[in-house]
Image 1 (cartoon, rainbow, N blue to C red):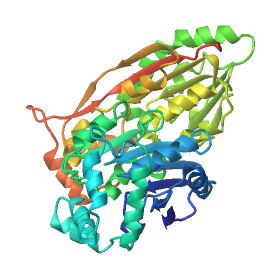
Image 2 (tube, rainbow, N blue to C red):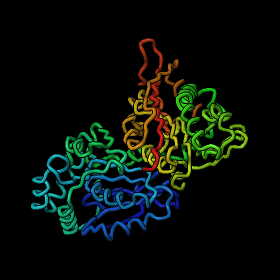
Image 3 (cartoon, rainbow, N blue to C red):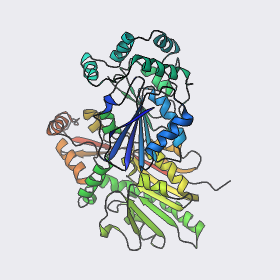
Image 4 (cartoon, one colour):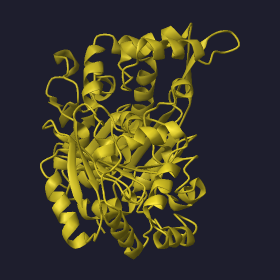
Length: 474
C-alpha cells in the first residue's frame, strides 16, 4: 500500500483517507482541515491484512485522534483497518463515501457481471472511460485530469485483481458512524449502497457523482475542534443569557436523572462517587446538581477553558477534548457520567457513548442529552451543510446491552424576527462550528432563509435524551 501525508503539520489529530481503485495521493493533495494531519492510503495491489494493516497502524501511532474517511473500493480495505484498530488506536469516527464493504455484490455493491466485465476488458481506453463515469460533468472530469494519478496500466490491472480476490464482508455497525451515497454515482449504484449499509446511518447526497467533493465532506462531517473551542470561549460571557433552549434541556435532563443518581449514590455509600460531567461549559447543568453532589469527587470536562466562577468549590476542572480523554480512562473507573448538549460536537457521539459504558462501573449511570438530526434544519435546507447529529436509534444501538431507563426526543422551535437575528443568536451562544461563511454565503442564507407566513424566522432544535444504567457483571 502507498501511504502519503498530503498535509502534515505535527497536529495531534489525523484524518486517514482510504482512496479507491486506481488512485494515488495526487487528487487529494489540496485537502486540509485545521488541527488535523491528512494521510492518504492507495494502491492496494497484493493487499495482505496480516502485514499491511500493522504497518499502517504504525504509521498512525502517536495521534490522539484518528478519523477514517474511506471512498469507493477503499471502504473494503478500511473495514480491515477498523477491525484491527478497535481498542488499539484512538479511532473516533469512520465515514464511508460511495462504496460498501460488500464491494462486489449483485445487491450491495458493484454487480459481479459488471466487475468481471471491467476486469476482463480492462485497457487504457476503458480506464479513461471509467474515470469519466466518476463525474457527472465534463468540467469535473477535466479538472480531475489535472491531478490524475500517475500510475501505469499494469499497476491498475494488478490492483483490480487484488480486489477480485477479496471476499465481500458485511459492514460492522460498531465500526462505522456514517455512510454517504451520491444519487448520481454511476459506479456504485445508490440502491446498492442503501442495501449495503443496513444498520449504519446512511445519508444520500443529491446530485453527487462517484468522485465527490472531498473537501466539503471533510468540512461538514469532521469537526473542527479548534473552532468549537474558540467559538465557545468567545461566547462564554453571553451564552447563559441567550441559551434558553440549552437551559431547558439541562433542566429536563436533571429532573429525569436525579432520582436515579440518588439511587446510584446510595448503592455505593459510604464511599465517594467518581462523577464526570462532559461539556460543562459555563455551568448550565453543573449548577443544577452542584449542591446535591458536593460531597463527591466531581470532575468537569470541557474543550474550552472555564471561567473560575463556573466551577463550584471542591469540583475539579479539566480542559480537554472529552472524545479523546475518555479513551485514557481505565475500565470501571467512574460511577456517573453526565452530559448536556455537548456530544453533537464530537466526531462520533455513538462511539463516545460506548467508551462511557466501558468506563462506568457496573451499576453506574450515564445520563445525557444531545441534539438530534432535525436540529437547525432551516440552516441546512439553505446551505446543504449540517453537523452529523446522532439519532435516537443510533444511540440506542450503542446501549442495547444495558438497562435503558429513559430514551426520548422532542422538537423545539424558537422564533426570531429575522434570519440575521438567528445568526446573531448562534454567535452569542457559540453553537455554530461549521466553516466560516463569506459575506456572499451569509447574504444567500439571509435571503433564502425559510420564514413563516407571519414573516418570522424559525430555528428548530431536536433534543435527544438517554439515561442508562450499566448492568452488573454476570
